[in-house]
Image 1 (spheres, rainbow, N blue to C red):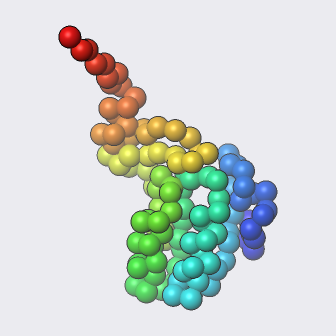
Image 2: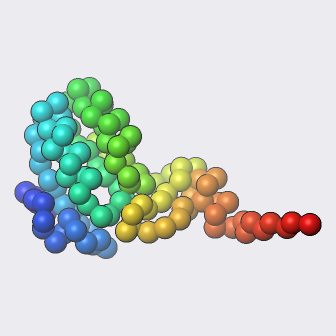
Length: 117
């Protein structure tokens, strides 16, 4: 869906299916505060995707999104890649817990116990 804007239902609810909501914010250097604000206002946190025609000048912006926005995965000029050795998790209202990677294996298959004498 092109030209999505803040407040649209597709940005406020998790849509399960082949749907991509696109919010165009402009050049990374000029749009960084607006893009970060858009991501921060969401209650969802499964993934964030950044697509830029000038990859080199957008790397700092992608690093800022990775550091500041509470999502499980940040994609930069890619989407949908899941590696079994990398943790996959949702944040905020996009699920709890981790699957895949050593973190996910520990969480899914090992049950911790404590014993005090």
